[in-house]
Length: 229
Image (cartoon, rainbow, N blue to C red; front, top):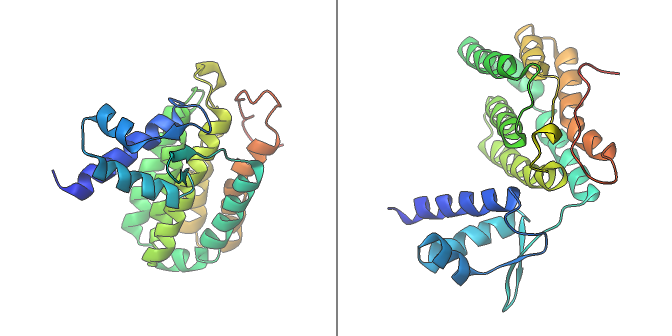
């Protein structure tokens, strides 16, 4: 197996275990322990931890290991602000550049996802992976690979924060969210309605910060009301 492939698999496995709360917040991850646990050498573990450290999911502690980072409201707010700077300015470029084929592919996928989630309690990881895939694919239409790569990193970082705040393990605590936002955004883009598309995208990006703002003190997940207030 190629080293970069093993590193990516190790990265994904560590991230998945962090997100699913296999370790408590502030837990110190150690290369040797993870290598023995996964049955691999320390090199891909070290590379995966370095990448996670660059994304601020863990923090390197000299002579100790890598501490799992606790995300705060400030972290979520900063990530949200960065998303606004990454996604909104290129929206007009996307509207002008997007092909009929890409629109059709995005619409088909989002309609399928939305139909499967109406009146359904959806696992948080399914919801966020759908969000990442949609926003990255849409942003990629602008043709700036560095921009899209940065956005994907921000979205992965937000996923860690969202999971930390809302994942309880109880199906009744999963999000139930209005499922048509992305479909509406695609329709606005297809109609070349820049103003409407910008408003939809703006609200969609802010929704994560708003969810955190209204989160009860006990941090149990809640269900979003369908529609807007």
